[in-house]
Structures are given as C-alpha cells and as structure tokens.
Image 1: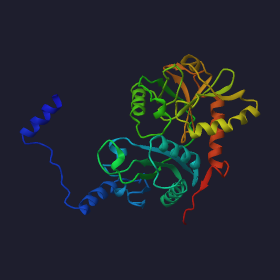
Image 2 (image 1 turned 135 degrees about the vertical axis):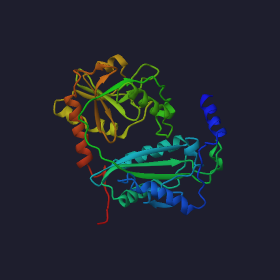
Image 3 (image 1 turned 45 degrees about the horizontal axis):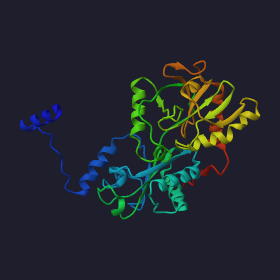
Image 4 (image 1 turned 60 degrees about the vertical axis):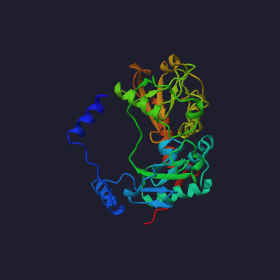
Length: 343
C-alpha cells in the first residue's frame, strides 16, 4: 500500500517514468545491439529455437515468445550437458532423462531424439565454444495465455551454449538444512522449469553465509541439494548416496556410482551404495560432498555450523573427484562426443 501511494504521488506531481515506444523492429534491434555491444565477452555464443527454425548467433535475437507456456505457466522441462575440451560429455544420458521429464510433463517433442541430438551437436559446434555448458528446454509452446496448452499449435525446443569456465573444486563449502519445503516426488523426479523452491533454498543459505542447502524429506531422510545430488563417506568408508525414488536422478551421480568401485579395488573404499540416511546419521559422516555436472564434486566441510568429520576436505572426496574429472577429460568415447569445429 505504501509503495502504491508513493507511485500515485509521483504521477500526480508529473514526474512519472516515461516509457519508450519502439515504432519499428529496426529501432528495437538497434537498442538491443547497443546493449550487447557494451558486453566485453559474449556469454551466449549460440542459441537454437524451433520457433525461428535455426541457430542464432546474434545475442540480440536470443529471445523466446512471451506467450510461450513455459514462460507464463512453467509448463516446460530442461536439461544440460557440459562442453569440455571440445567434447560434449554424457549428452545421451542427459537427453534420455530430458525426454523422460517431457513425458511426465505431458509435452511431446517436435523432433525425434536423434534430431534433438543432431541439433545440439550442430549448435555447440557453431558456437565454437570449447568449454562451457549446453542447456536445452522443451516447452508446451507459444500460442496464448491460458492455463491449458490445448490451443498451442506446437511444442517448442530451445537450446543455448553458455561460455563459462569451470574446474575441479578443491575448497570445501558450508551448507545449511533448508526450511523451504521440497518438491513432491512427481515434480522432483522430472527436471522441470519450476525452480522457485530451489532458488529460495539457495537464497536462504546465502543469507546465512553458506554456499547452498540440503533438503530433508518428510520422513526425515536426506534428499538432495537445490540443483545437485549429495553423497557421503561413512565412518566405515562406504560411499552412500540417497536413493533416487523421490529426487532427481543426477547423471553425474549415476556415473559416480558406476566408477567409484575403482576405489574399492584399490582398497580405499569398503562399498558403494544408495541408502536412506537420517539427518543425524548424515551429519555423523566422515566426508560429505555435492555431486553435479560442472563440479563434478564439491566438498562440504560444515553443515549447520557443525563440522563434517574433521572439518577438512576429505581424501576420498578428492579421489572421487579425480575419478569423475578424468572420466570427463578422457573417459570412454560413448560418453564424449567430439565437436567437429571448422578451422
């Protein structure tokens, strides 16, 4: 009410903000180019839009329609993959999950999986980006501002390359237990664009000087982080990840479960498994970590101001990080797709 009263006062005093009216598309594009012209480094070297029907290299044109149901109703799903040393890592695993999410959200893809894959490879190649992330979305599509997508002519597929640097994380971080309610299993197991709970949980952590948060489910078991999985090394040297029944099945977490037995062969780990952990059990772990695509492992050394283990980055945590990073850099060809850049 106070803000509205202040705004009314400004209008009455004749000092209201004057809104520019663009009389032509060329005038609008000129303004957009001025904005992007001041950017020293273009963070988004390429985008694909099925609405446009092609790959866009001009950042001023990297837009989606306001009446797209992903924008105003949140009816969309997304996924990601990383670009490292000119290769796409785990693209097929991410695409499989992407289409499973789309099925749960009742969104039909405008292309078969093989075409989606080809589009993403071509776009990543056109971007000339050698290190970054690839994100892509499937939406119910543009058409109107109603709740139902029945009036949308077709679903829409969007993708963008984000030119960003990342490396192994060797410094430990602090986390908190989130008080923001976590998503129900239906929405948590599909990677949909409704990320407000995730955003609020991160903001809550930042307010308390922490990096991020941990969700505890309604049964009192550890679930996941805001956009990453979480893993633990028990005092008995067991690697334990929460089961994926009610949380997102992270592609990096699943890959970790596949390659971590190498440390069992070396006699460094006792076992690798998924299993429920209560808050107390989890806080009693010897080591703790986030697991996600660009991390790939982020050590956690303190939770709710309580040290994990000795409060230092764990030896086994970094050994697992080395395994994943080596897999990203020089893993099997089935996981690393080379991008055919033109010289």
